[in-house]
Length: 288
Image (tube, rainbow, N blue to C red; front, side, top):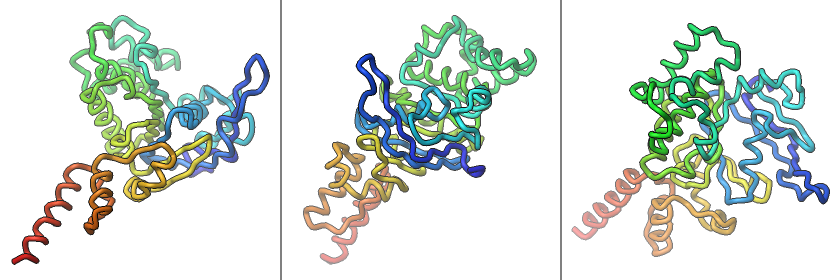
């Protein structure tokens, strides 16, 4: 357990309603996330992925089973602040996370609530804004920013608390393609350069493909777990779950169905183009 930043064991969760206990949302989840990893959790609406994310910093507590964050039991109320220092959350709508009328004041909000000394807060705010490429907007009003810029400010606010792990719960769902690219570039940089563990909850296949590990959820259970290039090769299995695959994989799959010998592990456009170029040049050589 000490080697995991997040670990769940037979995690079960049910929401309680006025009528009583609702159906099970998470049904026996066993998951271990290693420090410094970049994990995407993919699933259709209602699969339980966002509910699972809210267990990673004790926003929700298990109905059954256990969740540990850096070895700390999330059910231990005395360690709640320590747990939330370890795992920072970025949600779907940045407007719900931005609380100040000036960008730098918003980024300072988290460290201030942790009791960080003023001089250290200044250092953290400057460093966090530089990390997300928003240092030139420190004195701007957040409401004047684009969606992608607001989300990067929200991420800066989490970074300023210096967590070991950042969980992005559908954090790009409300953004346009430019904003999505900005946010994904930022979190990949955090993971690559600072070693921050990233957990990306998403329903976008192209985002999931950029992670080092892909966990697929369906009806409150984990049904696939592995490198994206391997998971996405099961095109028919994923489609049976109501999920699609990246467009590049879909193209290669259709070519395979047509009888061409192409791989299914080309997740990005460049990789797909390289495979198609190789296929075409081989065809020209055989004709010659």
